[in-house]
Image 1: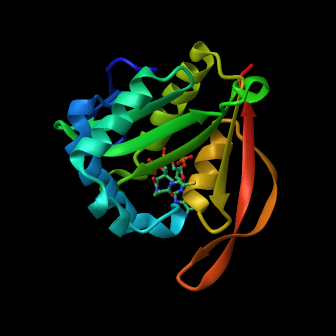
Image 2 (image 1 turned 120 degrees about the vertical axis):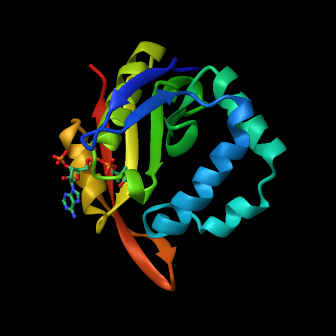
Length: 183
Ligand SMILES: CC(C)(COP(=O)(O)OP(=O)(O)OC[C@H]1O[C@@H](n2cnc3c(N)ncnc32)[C@H](O)[C@@H]1OP(=O)(O)O)[C@@H](O)C(=O)NCCC(=O)NCCS
């Protein structure tokens, strides 16, 4: 699944291109993931070190799979050709739950708080609906206030609390579970 390029202007005047990454964006993508995960690993699911062990070739295969698979897609934000944000929606495989997708996203600190997350999420949800998804779910750490604000702003509803859902820096941390129905 693939989203074609769309140019947006952030609150700070910067022009950003939103589009699905291609296999040829693999190195660019890995650079983004290393930066975003080193800045924000406490809000994500692994340390940035992980991305140092992923080869450009393997990342290219992942991106090609996202482009060609029937129920998942990725959306990236490009500033002057550099990837500075990424969002993925991955659908479940089993027949009866294929129209539910799990969402994750990361934006580099330099570009956060300027409306980019809102634009990426709105485009991703519009696209997900066109692609046939019906329900999107996500989890977010209870201390991640900007993300919670963003998800609730675009219409996600809190389902409940996931106690001790992640183990980070020797501590268990709680997450909220959220969902949105794409009606
Ligand atoms: C969370 C994230 C996606 C948000 O992206 P963003 O581009 O900053 O989002 P936006 O600027 O569109 O919106 C953020 C909102 O949070 C608000 N906000 C910022 N800091 C806040 C805080 N400490 N408490 C409450 N709200 C806050 C902003 O005012 C804005 O709301 P508004 O549009 O009504 O003014 C981005 O910061 C990010 O990728 N962080 C690191 C990784 C991460 O946390 N991923 C999500 C994992 S679940």
